[in-house]
Image 1 (cartoon, rainbow, N blue to C red):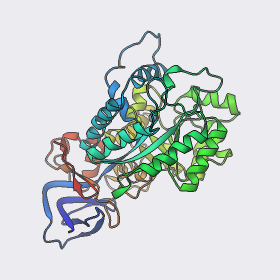
Image 2 (image 1 turned 90 degrees about the vertical axis):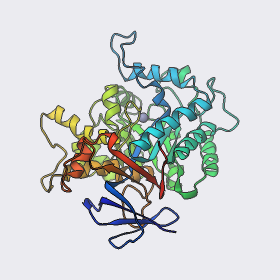
Image 3 (image 1 turned 180 degrees about the vertical axis):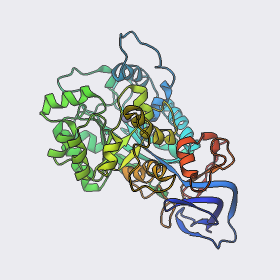
Image 4 (image 1 turned 120 degrees about the vertical axis):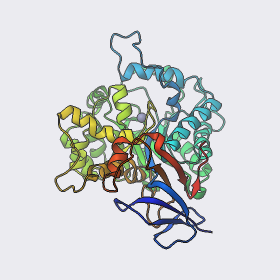
Length: 438
Ligand SMILES: [Zn+2]
């Protein structure tokens, strides 16, 4: 039987509309938005929005939240000193621990309106580096955690071959390493064959960790595999200046130039972070159709730098968003920080707005697109919007919550994107099923 919901407002086709019910079929797909539905569940005082899509997550990193915010023995702390602290946790977790911490992270995601996640998963082996008898044991634990909470997951299986160019092996990376593309692809094939894809709740993608961790021949082999199968490809690109310098030293080209000249970019490629790039690299990404995933709450926490989202927006490079290190899990905070970081840097307001924007929610609509449709495209599914044919994945907000009370339909989206507190979130529905999160 079909199900229907009737909130005060539905965000569809770029604006809030009232008097519309949304109808889903038993498979969880939206069949229509209509004014004439008699048996709809009434959601009084609530506005409905498409579920948020978190395009870049390392679920297990939730375990170090609050545990790296102090000066270590180093004179200067940085991304690299944080990484050693993160590895110290990563090397100790059992499969049960990984399930538990992932479930905690995914529960917090669901409670913040996230209905699908791209999990950049690189823990493959046991703590001493020996493979488990099932090489995808940990990947399946993470998938199970997401599906037990009730959100969708793209398991972006990471390839990791080395510590870096002319860098000695790091014993803290032994859980990640698959030293040949043949091994990686055999495990990837096995993962694809064993994921339960029923209802579209889980699927796989290919994730070379970075140009630092995956040498060029390996990279070409696994991206060719992804291209043959039309899988999403995600990769950390230009997160830190040292990574760019090492790439230039090894290949005589920046990471984006290397990927481009080797023919590795496509519209299924997502460059995660893409902070330390030149205007030429932005144009290259635009021409290739590739997207960028920004993770502002993590990038500000790690001291990575500011994503030049103004250049990406101007060049029409689609920008998605990720909670990455899980310092905070609030994708709308990432959306607003994408803009706010640029305000601080440029001493201007409304940097990501454009001249032809109309109405008080035009900038908010662009940021919301990053948190929804752009993320869905990045992780490889047709979601992030409320329209016939899309999955019935949505969340509602309480219009009387103090963080957004008093908004009019025209400025409601701007209120939500810039000011919503997570306390305002009420229903979370994935594939037509209400999640029981309390
Ligand atoms: Zn990451």
